[in-house]
Length: 90
Figure: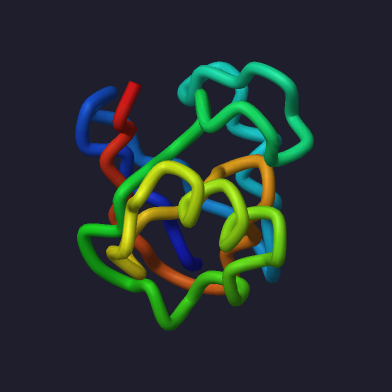
């Protein structure tokens, strides 16, 4: 069974198939939930290939913030399909 490990929270969540990271609101802090505020930013430590591609909203927001690392993601815009390790930024 695939799992998401959250480094800062020291928690691991197992899931079947696919999970939207926005469902992890007991672990990740969310603000607008629409890709506009950046409060739910996470850094992919490993398993980035098991996450959905970055959305246009993520590209726009990270561009405005000057963040160029492809390891940065907005949890509200991301889905996991397999194992990944994430580090919450805020």
